[in-house]
Image (cartoon, rainbow, N blue to C red; front, side, top):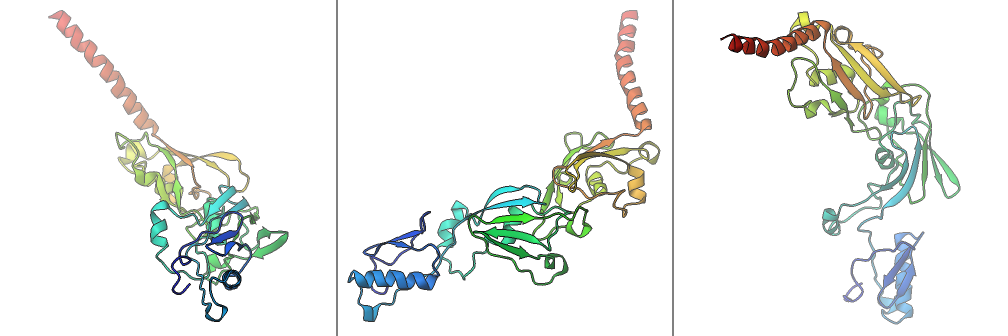
Length: 309
C-alpha cells in the first residue's frame, strides 16, 4: 500500500483460509484469485476510511505457496499421505526476498509421485487419475518417456492421486525421470574374495534407479579375480516383484551374468531396498577350509615341539 507502512508487509493465510490485515480485519481469501483478493482488501480499507477510493493502489503478490497434503495410491513404491511444497527452515527467509510467478513449483503432480517413492515399472502413466472435490481428472504423462510436452497438474490440499497398473514390467520406466525414483538403496553382503575387509563400499549400496544386478556385483567386488577359483561364484537377489508384490529369491551364476548381460531375465533391473549376496565358488570354499584347518593345526604343532624340547 503506497505510503502506508502500517499495512504493507508479509502476511500468511491461516489454515482456515483467512488473511488478517491491519484496519481491514479478517478477510476470507480461500478460493480467490490474487486480483480478487486485492479488490476485497481494498474495499475493506476504503469502507473503513483508511484509504481514499480515488487513490487506492493496493498490490498483493504471492511470495510462497503453502504446502499441500495429498494422497497417492496405486503403482507407486511408497503410497500414502504426502506433504508437498514444504520449505526447509534455512530457505524460508531467503525465499521471502525472491519474486515468484503464478505457479507453485513444488506442488505439481510429478512432485507428488516422487514424494511417494516414484512410479513402479508396471505403472500406467497414460491414465493417472486425480480426484478433486468430487471431480475426476485423467492425466497422460507418457511424454515423460518420449520428451513430448507433459500436462503436469498443479495440486491442492485434499487431492487424491491414483496410478493404475498395466500388470506388466515396462523396461522404459526403469530409469531415472521426473516421476520415477532418483536412486536405489540396496543391502549388499559380500563374502567373496577379493573383498573389502571392513565393509561393502557405499558405491555398491547407493546407485541410480535403473541399475542392473551385474553392476552392483561389480561394485561389490563379486566379479573377477583368479579364474580357476572365481568362475563358479553365485549371486542371490532378494527382491519384491513390483507387479505381484511377492518377495522373490533369484539365484544367478556370475559367469552367466558376465556372458549374457543384456537379457532382462538373466540380468534383472533392481528395485529399491533389494538385497544382494555373493557366494564363493566351491574351490574357494575348499581353499578357505584348508586354511582354517592349517591355522588350527599350526599352534598344536608348535605346542608339541615346545613340549618335546
